[in-house]
Every structure is written in structure tokens, then in C-alpha cells.
Length: 203
Image (cartoon, rainbow, N blue to C red; front, side, top):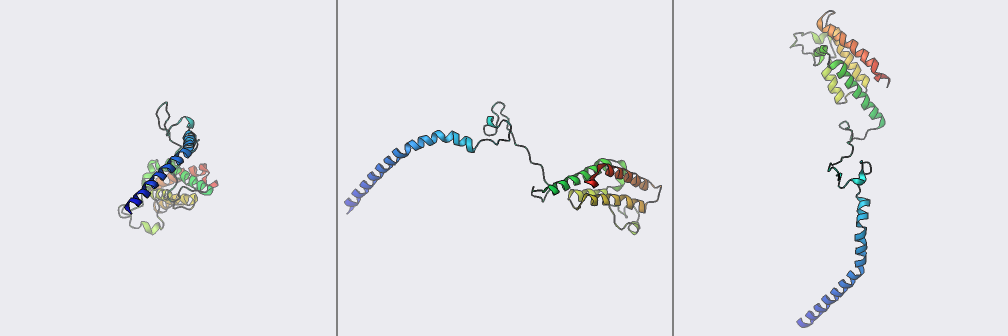
């Protein structure tokens, strides 16, 4: 019994060897043809993106002449929470908010009189305990900037209304001729002039 199983095993191994040899002889030409096509296939499926400058001259993203790595154009940063997929209306709205923010920084933020209005009024610190008897809706530049950056306004006009509220509150509480009142009135004039010139309200 052992001798017969051993003989069968030898015959099987021999037969397999013949089959493998025959298989290799059949596929050898195909392997040779495929190896010749590999460079073409690699160039077809792994070529550098066409939008990169001198894409044909790049190898693994590096220009052989200088060795400098070339990067594709950076995508513009999108507001948080948008996922980078903005509609045309959202893009226009985003652009308007940026205009308001820049206008506020350029025309008001750098003005020395803005110091009075950069933070919420602290009645205790300023020793004006009756402030909230006159001002029911306090507002300040810091709060407006934060709301702009967090996109808490529905429209740019809402941001403009809050900015105007700062000067209105100043005029409500501070008497004519006081330094704070004069600073608020001056900034109000500057803002109204800048807002009109920006044409943001017309867009």
C-alpha cells in the first residue's frame, strides 16, 4: 500500500511539472508583450495632472532641471461649516460680509476715536450705574467683529445696523460736547460716508 501511494505521488508531481512547463511556454510571449507595454500604461494612468506647468517634464512631481517640487494651485479657504461647497448666492454673500469686515477695519478700526467703542460698556468700571436705563440694546465694535467672523448676521445690512447702533447709543447716553459724544459722532460720519461709497447695500 505504501509503495503504490508513493508511486502515484511521483507520477502526480511529474505531471504537474509538465503542465507548468507547458503553461509557462504559452504565457511567456504574453508576458514579454505586456512588459513592453508597461511604460505606455504607466504614462497613461499615472501621468502628472495636465493643469500643472510643464507637466510632461515632471517626474514624481519634481522638475529634473531644478529639482524643485511643484505644487498645484491651493484651494481657497472656505468658511467653517460650509464643507467647501458654496452656491453662487452663498459666494456672493460671503464676499459682501468680507467687504463689510474690511471696511470696518480700514475706516473705523484704525481711528483713534474707536478706542471708546471696542469693548462693551462696563457701567461699574466707568461708574455710570444708570447706563442701562438709557441704553436697552448695547453694542460695541468687538461684538460686531465677532459676529461678522462667525457669520451670525443674515445679511450685511444687519451688520451695518449694529454698527449704527453703537453711535446711536453713544448719542443717547452722552451729552453734546462731551469727548465720548464727539468721538461717536465723528465715527458715525466716517462710517456713513464709507458705507455709501462701498455700494454694498446695492449689491
